[in-house]
Image 1 (tube, rainbow, N blue to C red):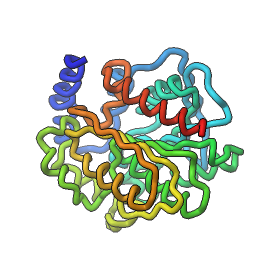
Image 2: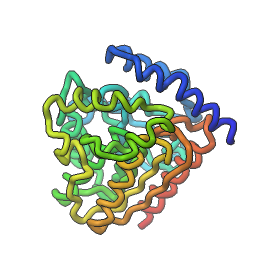
Image 3: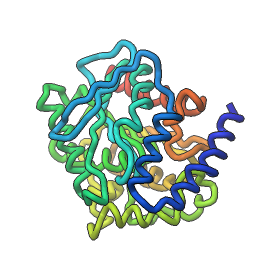
Length: 299
């Protein structure tokens, strides 16, 4: 287990972080992420992937094994709002579906810089409303996301709480919650972070916001309000630069009376759960999320 963690960390630092530090063209970054997902991410047995449309956006239904058709995980992929798609994250959601017995729906939201803020959060909200229109009750939906997708999910949650149509529960994996970039770990974890080059995170903000206010709660849910919020689970690594985005988000939600579970794992890459099937810590983390999902659907 320790050897595999070491190999993943070293590989992430030598390959992924160096590539992200020097890549200049967005199409190149997108192709490399899709290539890594296709070649490196494990597909669980009996996985089913069905293409669909949700609120006029492409979507992907993901399941593995025996599942409930009445319940759904509505998932928003990460990628800094500029890369990624349901295809890059489908294997991780298939693994989660197999563990908890619930199907997942991943929306292919519009990416920057072609589509600036708030296009992504608008698409994510429209997708959730489309699920309600299809007959899924809010109490039968759990929403989740990682990195930028985790931030978009929390921005979505704030809006749903205000409208009185919040889901049963929420989970986020290393969410990016503060585009003002005020978290201390952006600096103090710059060397221990093995995946994300700190020096380029400002570029991501510029490409996504394109003049928008980084303190807008739709961009930075750290500053949002969450009335009558359902339970939220967080997972993050103590070595990543976005650790404070999780810590401060947890504190903000708890201050508003939200039931929060937060698990800080030791010395792992940003969104390490995507290495399920290869990294035991990833398998254990997904099992923790699956147990949260099953427990919340039982209550």
